Length: 366
Image 1 (tube, rainbow, N blue to C red):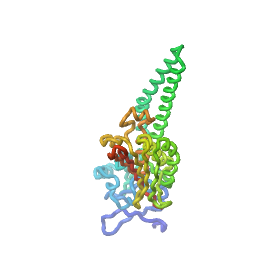
Image 2: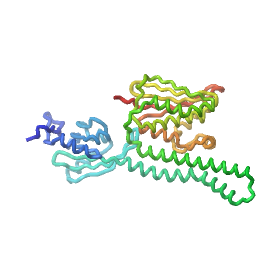
Image 3: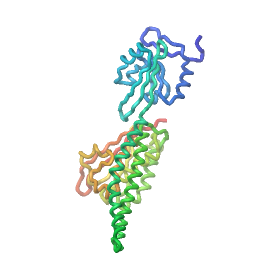
Image 4: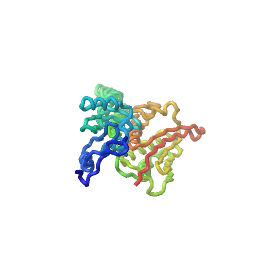
């Protein structure tokens, strides 16, 4: 006799009458939701008859009554199911895919009686990201720190080996050493920030953030620097008060617009304005940061978000750039399931070229 508080789980969706197996699905759901891994129950027609909450988070909502191949495409499930039916043994494999973000799962299928197969989905993305970050960190740090370290060592040896160095040369050497040390500090800070966001890129943050408040706070921080360059910051908010909400991490969103507005100040012409605009279309919020400057050649634009890619290496380093700012922005925007587009259009000789960074983020729906 079936527990009256239980819901039967359908397993046959091809016959005229829907057959069921007496699974106490309410108890199964409560238990399976304790797992960190996704769990599916699939019949031998390869139709999903049960999915726990972690599985829905990994593969999308409304999994029940869908074909397994629609949730995990490009897998030869016919061969796998034939093997499971014949040998009555588990089958395990790695599964990778890329839509907006690269993901990797370890999939384990196990027969559960005559009618069902259990599918365990273990998210390996975090481990893979950690391994990649470790490798990239060592490679990038060794390359980028070599130059300032060589400079520091050279000046230290000069100062140690010269007894009669005059104060003017000493001050000049110390000033260069100070700049190189600060450059290394900025580089390490950016590497740590990039490593953190790369590792957590596949995890959507859960705070509710007011985008207009974030932009106003960043403008307040950078306004003094902009005024020194006679570059007024103008914020045009076209979204009604209290409606500019996104799901995200407030510190990371601050970092995005701090980087973009700071870059607009660094690479814009003095005595030209910087415009920040916010608008929405009912589904997304779009923030544009535009300045007037030399502009960016079209051939460079696709590579701007690569780590350590610089259009002009000497100019970027002279202005304190580490070559990581836009890479950090890209990964944070990816984590928030958004997009970034970059355009640079020619203007007149006086105003310079208009470069615009546009960030599109999903609107939070209450």
